[in-house]
Image (cartoon, rainbow, N blue to C red):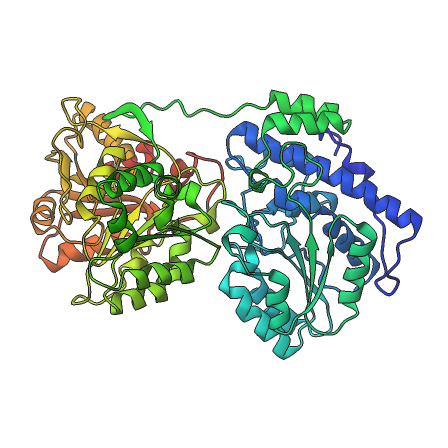
Length: 630
């Protein structure tokens, strides 16, 4: 640990016995020292993620250090536990990395590569990917049901599951509570109730909801207290251990206690800024860590993409801007009568915050409960002429499949924005990849209208919404976390500028070609365009097709590419379930037999930002190499 600028060797490996719920003065002093040491370390190495530009989450792991220190000491003092720090707030991954280091599985200097590309330290824990990590948390609020199963498999053991007031909003936990109570499972929930999620304070947007009362109503024994009162926290954990069946130890505290500039703030949910981290570290005597943090620089992607302009913007935000412009043409009364926006605590990430600020009367700030929120938007849009609008991350689309089916069966009108599609800029890695978006098109051929759209640049996003906003049926609009450049035509003009009109269901020729066509969409389009331009410079006349309506067959365009020598689909979606898995069938059904290739996401991620694309072989170099293969 000598290369890490905080002395983790000072960690005191004490053992605690839950049969003695009172800390001795020595035990208390050791725990307090460990808590401070680990909180300092978490602020430091998560801040390297901020400095590197890959982000990360500081507040959650920082908050829960006291309970984790107690758990670690309990694991050391008895073999009656399954010694895993199960955590259903997956973004608290810093906890897992720090404990892996303290337990000797991960070199301390590796912590300074937090969330960097190819570091094997992604934004959520992944089993088998990072040394010392003993489980994959997946997405928020998914672990408790899983831990129930681990408890059933280990009937003589006690299990801990770290949770939060945010993760408890997911419907999975309500089901997990009922099973745990019914089966008397020895699962002890350690819940950080800091009244903060990404977009706000649950006490504001979910008035009347109480994590403690909800769990108690489901039959779980609840023990509430101050998470920063070490003696009380330890006593309640001991009581939980000695109480048969599921128990929830709920710890109230402000977000990021003691961090000046973050305490109690929603900003504490994400990564600490370098400025705040430096002030914190220096005030806590960690000058070496502060000095090192000043040296961390963000890697730059210096690639120049041919065929695109130097104007970049985030389509996820453009979605909100375009909706505001359209809604602004309606009267106040018409908006309230015909439109309702239901957010799932991600308004800032999905662009919905633009609508919230402009037209709060049609906006519903809701919690981390994607299934129920989508269904509510669909219910509002059940009547002809009314429009539900819904937004969340694309990774969570898989959670809403049943609700999508119900919306379709009820002829609902829903405009859904699923941002963070694909893999670009996804340091959270595999569990947050938005790969299976085609699952949204799960109705029958004669069913109610369902269209999937993935605009290629900000201009096309705006044009797309102008066309489809008031269309009936289910419309799914996808965007990336990353910014994308403006696509240019062969004369250097904005392809989707001027008098361009988006036509639903129509594919678009971005470049003509005689040697075959690459078919792409979204953030893969500008990378494909770069590859096409470079191949043309080599004398290989490749064409490029944009398919912004993913699930509708454009017969004319299919005939065009089907008669060409070669067709290659390039996408960031799952190679098993994406556009390419369908297009080959569409071609064969019509008797077209060009050489066919398909590139997509096919392996676990590598962390980082743009580095995910070359990792999957779908960057321009990979596209060129694949097209040239026989």
